[in-house]
Length: 136
Image 1: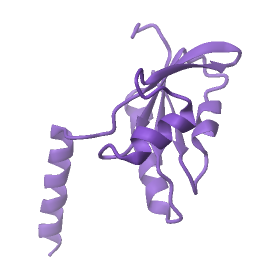
Image 2 (image 1 turned 60 degrees about the vertical axis):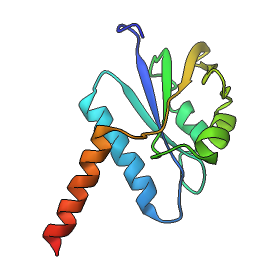
Image 3 (image 1 turned 90 degrees about the vertical axis):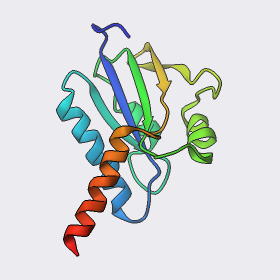
Image 4 (image 1 turned 45 degrees about the vertical axis):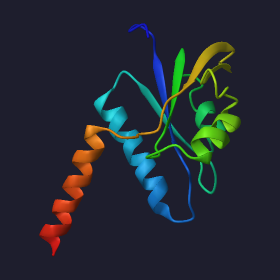
């Protein structure tokens, strides 16, 4: 990545009839945007919530981004992250990237890994355990 590039992040969620999933994905996107003010952040959902993933991509119109990274806010790979989302976004499962048009320009769309096993996730899980113990 060239640091002078304007980068977009599309935070992807599953979607749910319950508000919790959308709230978490939207909250994570807002935290990224607040912490990394040089990045344009949008959200998109597979189903039941808006914006859809395609609407999330459309929301980059007028932002000047040259690359968008689609980040699934999922803990692990599954059918949705390995098949459904790449298909919705038109991304090859092998290369994990494609080119889309935004404002008439070619923009690279890259698909990242889900959150996965990470020290930050372990720290958060431990913090949640402590919170549960203290609430008892």
